[in-house]
Length: 90
Image 1: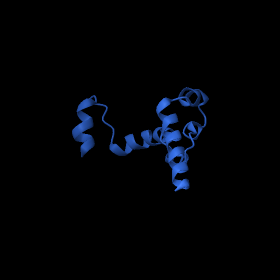
Image 2: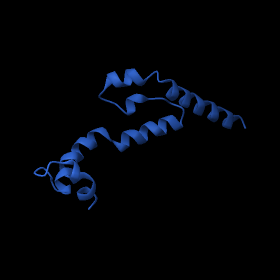
Image 3: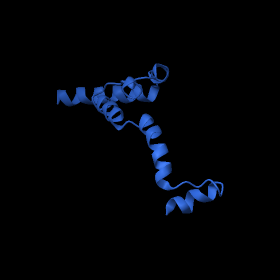
């Protein structure tokens, strides 16, 4: 119902595939981009104070190299490491 209400008005009258048809086409594309296992592994590493962007993009060295020095992500990993260090001392 939401597809008909929200999406169909944006499509040409003769080009309005069924929701199942659109899902079948979109699913493999989204699965290649949104791999929840990779994301979970990355988040577990960050939670341990390890910044490993290659866990998110194992086949894209260019992206890994570009984000490897991202200040916010480096700070987050360092902040978690410091937190764990303080926690061990107490």
